[in-house]
Image 1 (cartoon, each protein chain N blue to C red):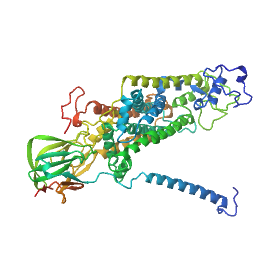
Image 2: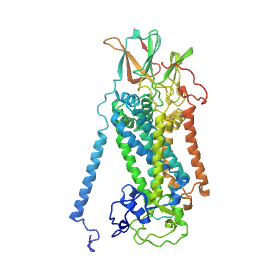
Image 3: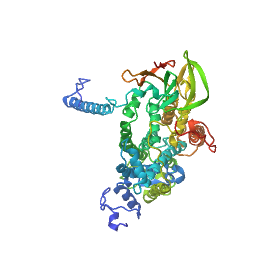
Image 4: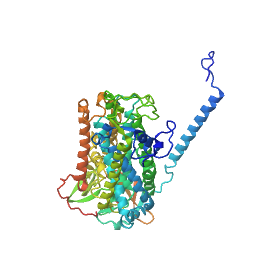
Length: 175
Length: 446
């Protein structure tokens, strides 16, 4: 392409302009199509199970511990007092198993007394938790979650809210 | 397939009067013609260095890997017709392949063994290339072997990801808990982690969307990418003037004077850019250091490829593939072990949760993201950090690379040791056991 020596920086001629425009438009279109394809893979609707789940009537929960595999949840009952601890390991999400302790121990956890009947062990990477969910050994970085329990107003069932972690002094006391 | 005499002399250079080629060429001319006129053979140089072909130099591990990739593609094809990527039917269809379909167990076993051996072969290939300094540029102009090293690392990662997506497909317990752990490692990445996990799973839980994603990655996206990179990997070898071993031959004084050929429409060893028809005759082309690719190179490739396929096919007859219980979101197996080539990672994420005062770094992040990332980053950057002399390229254990080879071998040894511990020394609740020590009896149900 010839250059005019009197103009050191000549304006682009029409052909060059359209070539640039064409290539630019092509790249922009490809980019947008790529982004659109990627965006289509991000779900807009969640078909996941609801996080608030009815667990059954309180009388179905005997004194001691009950494991609810579908919710990956341990529900503990002592007389009229209930609390629920998540079974999802805080390290990489495997389901921890409960092991009954030979000696039941009562400890004050966050100001409230708590009977520790079990401890929790993770089969994937060997994390260990005490009965209140505290991580005591292995790679687990934080304690097991405690979840909010309530009684459904309509039919009196026990309800857990898996999206609502609570402090470890949370108790649900039945009327 | 002997050619008639008139086929020996084409009318003009590059014009081939007959579309015939011979696996048993009677002359150099015929050997060269076979390379140029055959689609498959045109990958190869017309002549190959004897040293480059030596079994003990490259151990032919790249060819073994490529043969396994070919076998995986072939054995994957019938599985593609038989497998159903739905959470309700995936497990059943694999069970059918294993127990109902004629030869199904064998095809699945070939596929599985080829996958396991490919992970090993690609890894050993990397080890070989490192130890023999084959990622180093030698005497040729325009060489960029470091790019091929990078390509190789990406291909190793693709191989691992292919295996990962592959063992998810049966949707058994191994699959389900591997996805759980694997995607939780991804979600340990700061800031964008949970989004990455959601993108991988197609939701927040492991469901149908997850299976179809990993299926499409396994059968189209990853093999396609690996195929393209494989072709590029091969092309780069030619561009870089062959194996690093060839550079040593180029530095030798020519023992035999080689007159420049009259028509060189193809370069003999694909010697880098800037050469071409006026290629400098050196000992690379000397008669006593090179051989015609047909049949010397093709014969060895046939031995390696057919040998690999035969070994896998025979092994698969005798050893069946395992299939665990159907995926059960309710019960994590105890212990839940990844396949052997990921067990060193499982060991690392177990041991790297660090407490700094009240601040805790999850092992999932340190051991699952940072350490493997550093390892891959260091490997990728090594050709630019390596200061060993050019003469060390293409030599096993040269003096000048003793220290870096030792450090590299230590790292390899650490990975192997962790793999061993994960495979043989971990029992229920990931507790340490001696390999000969019986595991404690535990109730199978909670």
